[in-house]
View 1 (cartoon, one colour):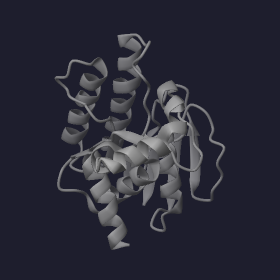
View 2: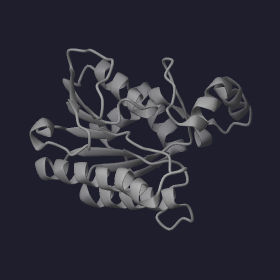
View 3: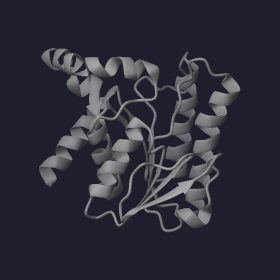
Length: 223
């Protein structure tokens, strides 16, 4: 498979990148970002773009796209948030759909996403989910809760940076309350589930946190 990853420099994108590079059935990974990654691998090809305008030639032959690009709505104008979150995603999706309408597009939104929600971020991401699923028969939205960074990665989002040292305690408490499937996943699980969607699909197009955990466990049993 040829995998295209947007936002590989972020925490979730790093999970997509690591798992894709380690997968035996992935032959090429194209990472599209605004700055080069400090990663080298024979499978990896990097495409640096300041405005994330996709280039069809670079994306040709892709079997799947994993979208991990995202920004926090906190302190950002509605116009800038809409442009980065909605416009960039849709520009890439339309280009990829024109190249391969059967491509698997995995979009990461988040728990609480709702096109009719009160929060602006929830409405914007809900619109994107609907557009992606309508555009691609193999379009999926992942709605994780807390995503635990693996391999020593640190989030660019301040809230996650502050929470990272507390993740072991949070994971213990969540596990004690038996809420792990509902509230927590990891970047490794996110990467593995994205690959499972590209390989086998899933009965539902919107995966809540418990679906992500279940799909990862099912994939592990199948390996």
